[in-house]
Length: 71
Image (cartoon, rainbow, N blue to C red):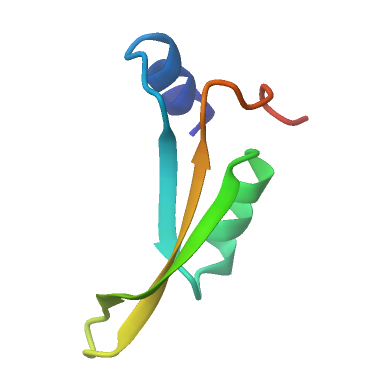
């Protein structure tokens, strides 16, 4: 994820890189946090699961001005 994010900022001049995950997926949310992505918002009732239930999505992002990678 670090390589992809660095590539997006340095080579593609991206203004923002974001990660989305199901709010119940605590492992994916933890990865975003460890990489220094800021939690922006929960998107309520954003998607439908295979069983038809509505799910919330978490959004995390980094921008070029954010500090470099945490240790």
